[in-house]
Length: 223
Image 1 (cartoon, rainbow, N blue to C red):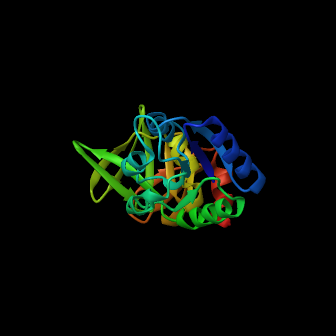
Image 2: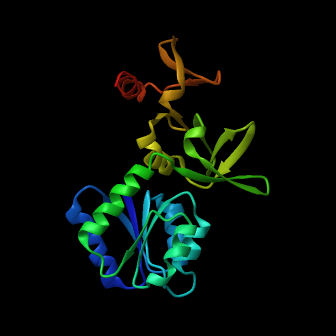
């Protein structure tokens, strides 16, 4: 999994990064020292899990978690009194400092199981929707944004297609050309037209696969 570490204490960030490296299953992709920087890093890096301190200057960890239901949160804190509130914002786990290696390992294992459901946030006009990524068959890059269709409504995501590709790969999504990411489980038929591979999704949409990516898509479908 791709992990973001958020803590206002550099020593605490370094210790967590070292523990993650020692466990050897996951990758620390970035760090942030406060809540505002954490929100920016979540948007920019698209982590699967955030190891999130609670007590920080400005925006605290509870506010960050409440604002972003599309990423798994494991709280790492010296304050036991926030545990009830932490689970109200759907935290995966609540680890008390100093964090033991076996507790971190158990929390990350729980996060891997949770990953089967990935929540995304998107805009439809003035409304913000939070939804299960697997409900959507395909995501399309348009200018600086990514769009998708859900319940007959076009949604706009701030995450790039590259970020979504990394996040949704465990769910079976695959890039089929520069501007399209699809769920291979939603492919109903394949067609060969003019020497090009085309995929017919279960909603009737036809998606053309680029020549460069066609061998990888065929391999993924066979497996």
